[in-house]
Amino acid sequence: MTPTTTGVRPPAITAIFRRVLESDDVTVDSDFFEAGGDSLLATRVLSAIAREYDVELTFDDFVIAPSPGALAALVESLRP
Image 1 (cartoon, one colour):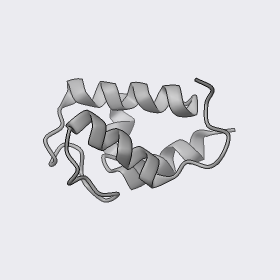
Image 2 (tube, rainbow, N blue to C red):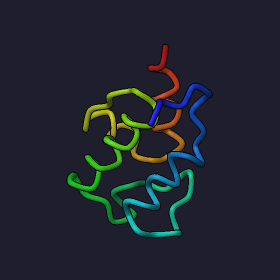
Image 3 (cartoon, helix red, strand yellow):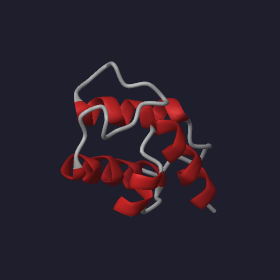
Image 4 (cartoon, rainbow, N blue to C red):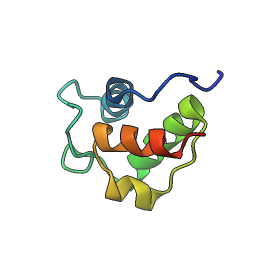
C-alpha cells in the first residue's frame, strides 16, 4: 500500500481506532486509553498510521495525543 498523499483526516484515524479497539463507539475526540486501549493495542494503531501515512510516531507521541483528532493533527504536522 502506498502512503496517502492527501491530508490526514481525523475520520481515517478514527476508523483505525475503531478497528483496533473493535468498537463503533469511538469518536474523533475519544481518548484511546479511556476507550479500553492499552500499550499493546497502541502499537497496532501506530503501525497502521505508519503504513498509511509514512510517519513514524512514538508511544510518547500517542500518550500526548491519545485521540484520533489529536493524532491526525500530529501526523499532519510531521509530514513533508
